[in-house]
Length: 384
Image (tube, rainbow, N blue to C red):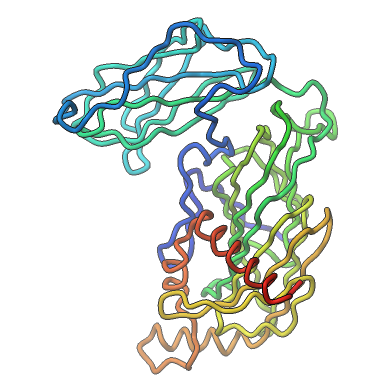
C-alpha cells in the first residue's frame, strides 16, 4: 500500500486560495446543535430562570457579561441531567482566551458571571454525559451583547453496537486543479434518526469502535480532515477512512479533502456511497474537461465570480453505489494556470480556483442551497 499523508485539522477545512470550509465550533467535533426547547418525554425542570433579552438602551456598553448554560436530556424518558461539571471555552479568532468551569445544579443549569468583555469572544460549552462529550457554540459576545444562554442537549447511549439507520442527507464534492494535483473537497451532512448516541461497532479486541466509513478514490493522497473529525478520532487503512467519534442523534457535518495525482493529464474519480445518500453534487470548473460521468446527471452551469463551474447531480443512492467521473487534458490546464501565475498570457479558460472558492463561499449551507435550486430545476426540466 502506498504511503499516505494524513493531516488532522482541528478547526476547519482549509480550501484553495485562502477559502475555508466554515463550521461553527459546535460542528467541529461532529456534535450538532441541540434544540432550544425540551424534547417530548423530558422531565419538567424547576428553577433555572434566565433573564430575557435586553433593549439597546439597557445594554449600553457593559464591562462584563454573563453566560447561562442549560443542559437537557434528549432521549425521551431519560433522566434529567444535573450535578455534573460544565466547561465553557471563550474563543477569539480561533484562539482560546479562557476556559471557565461551573457545576450544574439539579435542574442542569449553570451560570457564569463577571466575564470581561474588553475582547469579543464566542463561547463553546462542553458537558460530559454517559461517557460522551457534547458541545454547543453560543453567539458572539461583546460589550453590546453581554448576556446569552447556551442550550446543550445530551443523550443516553445505545445499549448495543447495532448501527442506527443513519444516512447521508447531502454530499458535495468540489474539484479543483492545484499545483499538487487534483484536489477534491468533500462536505457531508449525516443524519442519525435515533434518539440515543451510537458509540460504534467494535471489530476486534483493542480496536476502537467505528461509526462512519468513507472509501477514498484510487490514488488519493494528502488527506486533510476538518469538521466532524479530531486528532486521534479516525484511522486510514487502504483508502478506507474510519471515524471513531460517537454518532449523536440529528444532523452532523463532516468535511475532508484529498489530492489525486493525474496520470498523463487524466484522472479517474470514484465516489462511493457510505450509506443511503439523498442528494449528491459534484462541482467542476468549466475549464476542466469531463470526458465521462457515470451515475451523475448534468445540473447545468453557474457563474461563480469571474469563473464558471458545472454541476453534476445524483439522488437516492444506495449503500455502496459508485459515481464515476473521468477528467482529461489536465496537463494543458495546469500549464495555462502556471503561465498565468508567472505573468504570461494565460490560456483561455484556465481556472482561478481561489475565485471559485470565494464565490461559492466555502460553506456547506451555501452548497446545500445551490443543490436544492439545481435539483428543482432539473426535475422541472424532466431530468432524472
